[in-house]
Image (cartoon, rainbow, N blue to C red; front, top):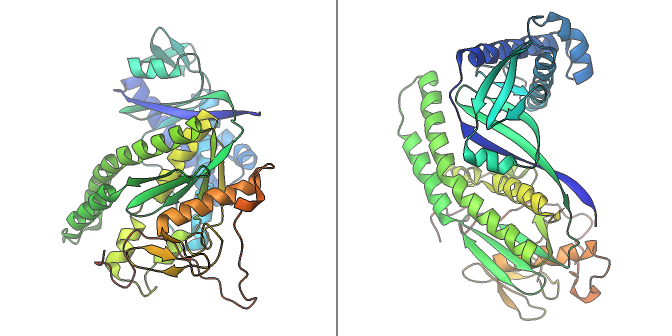
Length: 392
């Protein structure tokens, strides 16, 4: 067994005092100075940016706040450079919201978070009972403050469970299907999240005012409401999946869906409604929640290629044929199985190669494609097809 350090965060609301607001404003100003220096000098390295911008920052601010501002600006500059490679017309980044991130100087005393404002001068934020209970006995690494919220990241060391089996997770638009190597199969209905996304998409489409600033404000407001309704659904499903894996001492196998958004771009011969539905699919957020919850519980997470997970028969590995109502038929062994269940079983079986004691008879048989065959990426999109978005 190996010990790993895992990190989580807790958030609460608060009302910033005048001293804190002044500190947040100064921190934002330092971030923008660092961003300007980074763009002017064309640097995004933490060390180089520190050497070029540290002396330009206000000497009246504590040193570790200056270092944290440089570190935060470094992350913004790296994201900017990455985005600019994809879109050369990307605007220069600029920090508009008041915020403060620090890894130093803070302390929790008598239910209060103490933050230094100036040398030997402190500002205090009262922590609620939930926050105190969560961070009790754990190591708090950093604090992020805005005028109305406080986020604390904390960590612990956990023992990673040696998997005795694996759980394959097939993520689809309207459902999440899991299958374990012991034969158990479960399906979680996610159609409610699809309906919520469709409702807010319709509401935003009714906005006709030709004002980009107002449009941004309206879309941000409804986007936040949409997220607040979808997040609890994802949270509940991810929690149950990790609990299933931990109870069965199983590892979690998921598909590597990097670059999947490219499949649903304009010009891919897909309807506008279909592309909108697929691009509102929160597969990445579900993956993030499963990953951090599994890490906290010591459950191993492994990613495998998404190629042919739905096409290959989970019994014999032969290429299946489409049947009715999202069911597959294998001409080799005669198996008829649900498409999502078949993919989840293939993912679980694919995890056996990570186990030295896995039975060789349960590994998937790979049917080789011709050498000159073109690889076409494809991902299940729930029960909707790209050619007929209304068909169920």
